[in-house]
Image 1 (cartoon, rainbow, N blue to C red):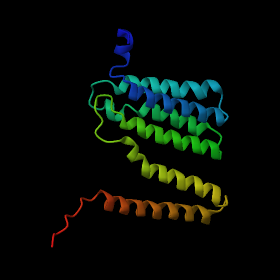
Image 2: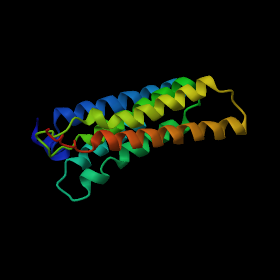
Image 3: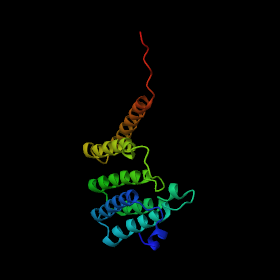
Image 4: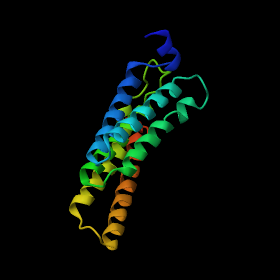
Length: 176
């Protein structure tokens, strides 16, 4: 990497660059499919990603935690301006999962202690339930919306309870 790029993007590694490319590509695709002008659909995610990459590698205390904000604002802007449809919702959900993966990629960590994909189980399950609810239930009814929220909350409580049981330490068995 050239010294100029190294000064602009400190701590840039292949993992964070890969995650940034995935989020940016999905955000641009969401904008294009959502009917936005190509200039806006491409400029906002690319600019947000560039600013985020420049901030996250800095050794400042809040840079790693709050450095993802420009990319989130850019993706949110593209999502808010896109014409709503099932495909746009699917792309927006997958983009959100990509942002979560990008958040798991800390530039200062050279060795990863856990697999970040495990953290996508519950949000991915929520996205799946939301998309199945949109497809299966009729639209434009208040009662259906309330029922969908109740289904999602009930499923979230079940997953939360199961996660507690799966994460708990094993109890040693007593020998006879």
